[in-house]
Image 1 (tube, rainbow, N blue to C red):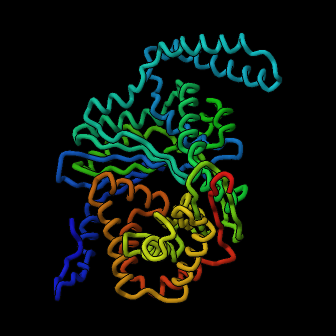
Image 2 (cartoon, helix red, strand yellow; image 1 turned 90 degrees about the vertical axis):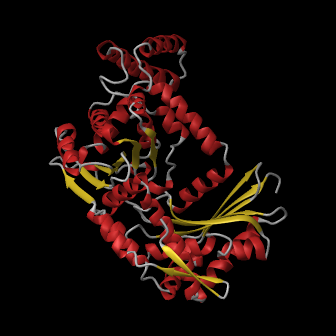
Image 3 (cartoon, rainbow, N blue to C red; image 1 turned 30 degrees about the horizontal axis):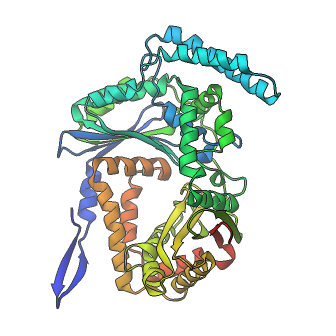
Length: 490
């Protein structure tokens, strides 16, 4: 759907934004929300345009909730949540369960033997034999196959610093099947194939982090910005922490954070809200609420610093600044500043660093790294051209953000980037899946899904002076963090 009209005059196209309030009001009228007695929150949006539905379960737990020494556990649990239950994913759970218990015991014995430098050959052989025996009871990916056989697409999950989400889209007539399966996997999960999945995650870490210098630089920058704090730890986990995790620890983490009162479910599509409410009570209502652990705490340190990595890689430059958490009054203005800096060929970084001075091949600004529940980072990342040093690029980036502090944007530039951000937000609302994601996230993080529409309205009220004030608050030189990749031998 197009939300702007273009009036052509003297060969120039001028954006004339349409009043979107009627659209937002109509959208809100289609949404029903309710909470079960156990605290599980549901948001249901009726969109009968096609006989499909998108569903999303939002667990308010991510990497920021992990304890030191247990990094990566939230992401590990996301993988294990697809392994089934006492009735799904097993040929005979009564016979499988003792083997899983024995594997846990053997794993502890192996870790103790290795820590003492003892010969663990016999233990290893026994572990492998029991593992092979347990594998005979596994119906691999049965949970996913049941849904995919019913027509589900996009079945997946993601873990961030702030949350873990599980989602898919499926034919509307299969919604009850999804609700029954989703309720079961979070009521009685079995974390089978635990050690096989650990190997998968360690390989994922190798590919995503160990072999990627830019990712390593970002992780090092986070650690510098947030020492001994939740956002300073890698979401995928430290290698040693992943290797040391056991099923009992993951099960305890699950019990702490996957109670119904820490979950939000969004359902968007061709649904009957009254029927959804009945199914919600039928399938999810019996699970009792659990005590919630205290929320993670963190505060960005206003410190300058530099992180340098030497690698066989192209040079890279990053400039980052501590920024406030999501519900700060300047959050929208800072998101707009990222648009001003790097959205398209008319952005400040492209015009100055890519085309103007020809210092970089590409540049990008992104706020809220690695999350927005806590104070985080506003990151500007750039790939220098051959022969240009990262230090030169850092100086150019600093000069570019200083201009935003010294001179307000023109109204035309603000209107352009606001239209772009508005379109991003509204295009996300065009799809059932995008709506489910946004509604669940706002409900969980802001406490009310209606805040999504309030933010869309607030976006229209931001002025050039608001952006200048936000830039002065954000881009403080004495809080600047610099990251750089230097080629080996530099």
